[in-house]
Structure formats: C-alpha cells, structure tokens
Image (cartoon, rainbow, N blue to C red; front, side, top):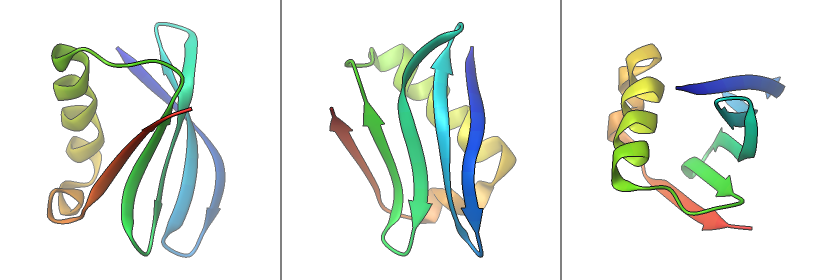
Length: 72
C-alpha cells in the first residue's frame, strides 16, 4: 500500500517521499532523534498500523526508536 522513494541518504540518516497508492502524502526520515513523519493528511489507524509494519519489516531495529508525527 505505501511506497517509499529515497530523497537523501548519508551515514545512518535518510529522508524518503511517502506515497499511498500513487498519492504523495508527505515525507518520512530518520536522524539522531529517531524516525519522523511529516504528513499532508491524517492517517487512519489501519493506515498507521500498515505503515509501521512496512517500515519495520525492512528494518526491525526501528521498533526501539522514538517516532514523531507532524501534519504539515
């Protein structure tokens, strides 16, 4: 359901464009404070659970990090 397009990566930091079914809904990234999401719209609980599952499947270590969601 969610698609990620890497914009910037350096060391352990990265930023991705975030899409849901070809609709750009914001960005997500990782830095020294943890993972963050800058979203153009609110996500349903179903979408949030799916997003967390997709992100952590590729990197289970992210489950230990803090995360922040912001609506832009």
